[in-house]
Image (cartoon, rainbow, N blue to C red; front, side):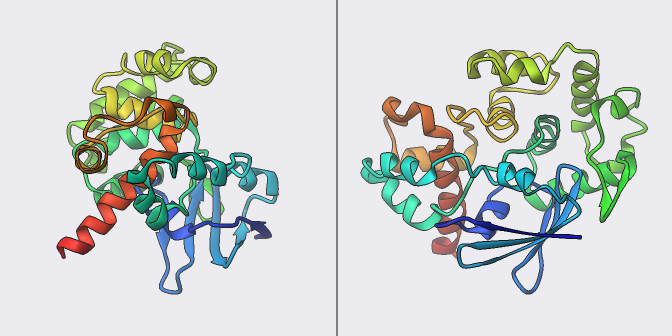
Length: 268
């Protein structure tokens, strides 16, 4: 394992890894996290602004990119703080950063996320990796689309993914044969990327927007699920401000984690 230290001010490792944008990290009793970024296993803990990473990936640049250190979140928060309704969510959940995840993994994971909860999503993703990924230090990689493209629904039955299995297979086949091209989506507009991803069976606007935000770093993507509908009704009943469209994906994560976490605490 290689030791890497990143300095990330105003950051919450816990909120970032537990806010619903990724599914291959587990919190340990001591507050550290163990899991995978792409094919790379790591144990990560935070001490103030220092993020200490023990990883199979020696390249600090990989982790620099994964935690999106080239995006100025403090500037984004200052811009969003102009809106009174954003101040509470930023104060409570502003330590979140958007992870730069592998586009295929993000797409497949959010297909699995449909009508699902985070523990079940993690279980299906874990079984998918164990059953079809390649052995790597610490566990198994996320399976490539080419590995899944030749599978059948019966092959995926052990995942216990239900109706989502056929969606996973369709996505894998279309990415593997080039019908869906992640490189093309990366260089397209968010609207164009959404239209391309929605060619996949079972991928609607919400899943496409999740893939675009978490897998392609399209910061104008804005996934809306039942939690976000609650948040928008509470904070922005007339819709999210168009003036902040270029960074509304960052705002979305603050709003989503805030409404899901703190509404549950208040109601509990």
